[in-house]
Image 1 (cartoon, helix red, strand yellow):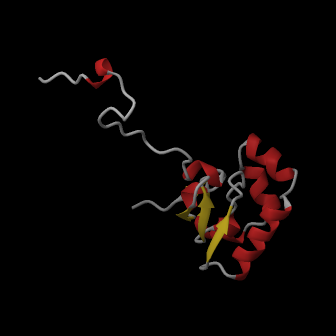
Image 2 (cartoon, one colour):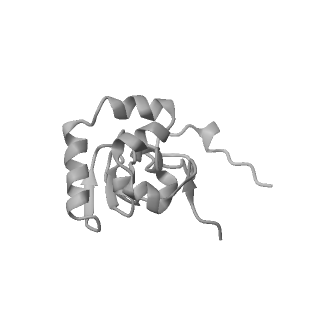
Image 3 (cartoon, one colour):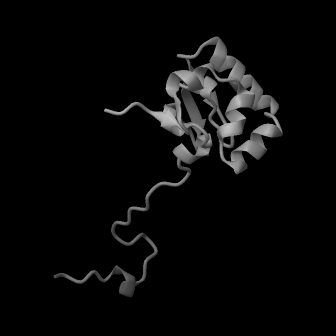
Length: 126
């Protein structure tokens, strides 16, 4: 199985890389966001991850860009209702946390509801 690389860098090289070096290799949209700096909540989350990387960290920072310091961490990302468990893998680098935790469920329709009219209750038999 081929080893993972991100823009020509191996996983080990990425973990040793500083944030400034990582900013240079991400796409322009993420680079612009990272150059502006982290919010207070994002800084606190990064500090918590550095302190205890294997602990389950809950966060609402869906807009945070995944950086190499977060690799291997287990996060609970808020989806609007509850926290969804998310393990950070190397393939996620440069993406935002919210991209991996969906806020909407798939719609599953069944029979018509309580206030349905007679015509909407009709279900043809095949």
